[in-house]
Image (cartoon, rainbow, N blue to C red):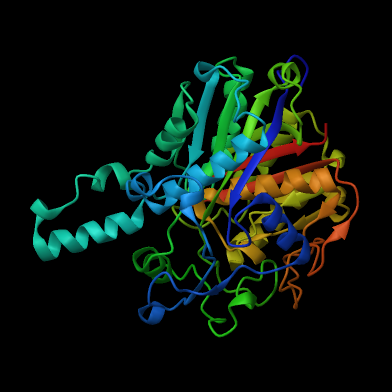
Amino acid sequence: MSGKTRVFITGLGVISPVGNTVGEMWGNIRSGVSGIGRTTRFDPSRVDSKVSGEIKNFDVSKYVDAKEARRMALFTQYGVAAAKQAWQDAGLAEGGADPERVAVMIGNGIGGKEVDEEGYRILFDRGPGRLSPMLIPKLIANEAAGNISIALNAKGAVHTVVTACASSTDALGIALDMIRAGRADVVIAGGTEATVTEYCVGGFCSMKALSTKSNDMPEKACRPFDAGRDGFIMAEGAAIMILESEAHAKARNARVYAELAGYGASGDAYHLTAPDPEATGAIRAITLALKDAGLAPGDVDYVNAHGTSTLLNDAMETKAVKAVFGEHAYKLKMSSTKSMTGHLLGAAGALEAVICTLAIRDGFYPPTINYESPDPACDLNVVPNKGVEAPVRAAVSTSLGFGGHNGVLAIKAV
């Protein structure tokens, strides 16, 4: 850590299945409330998995006018909303940052899929001449970052990171490196996703990746680390952090939540969808994040696991944590908040980084709900069903994506 620019988290914004503000989300996480329900975004009768973590009661007019909203896909609307929340939360809405020194780094896995689906229907039914001129600008993955840049007058680098379920974790890690390298003073970083569509759910169902056993009990469907887990739950939303160099934050007397202290990334080089059962890539990414943060294994109190509720991931991830932390693995707490939010794909890591930040601020370990039957392959303390009040000195957030993309963040108290 010596000589590295410290990077502080000064603003948070969230649109999630368990709340459309940071306060609402965190209150529900603390209470163990599930945001998973019967899918309403489309008629789920033709797909095997009929539950999802949908955004509820989202009012885009709070963030953009009707004309702007019509020019945005849903993932962009979520991203802009969360970014504006975070910008306001950081105290930057009235100024305080040079626009040319403010960058945007957004993770997204898939893009405007509902726009894509509608476009194909028009193409097949009515021909290419009837396609909207906004089709491409709405559906491509970089449009969330572009719209956030425009909305907040951020004139530094504007990038999109696409690494499947690790996208927003990698976006935050790259933003950390960007500030350390002196390329920006402030980075608006995080992720957004909106893939609760018949096309996407159907595709994941064909892979046998989604839960299908709890269609009649949606709130019980996601059960990470439990012996009865049978797949992940598709979800949507956005989470954004405002990251600032220590010098910039102190110069404007910013309120600081925590320090984004370390980032590690690796590739499994193993399989397009299955994790390496030996967990070598995950082990390497966690180790790199700790080293980058200057943390010893014993300094970490909490791991927010990728914890997808799939048979392969949860066992592999448990193995990785035990390999990195040794005996301390049985002393720390490791939970999966996906049990409440579902899996936000490219936005999952950013939401979980926000949760880690609040866990440190408030001294609270979020629970893994729906934990009923222990799995011998997942034998760590997963904070079953009820959260725990206790100090959190440092937290690690893991994101392990299709394609073997592993991204890990280390966050610590200031």
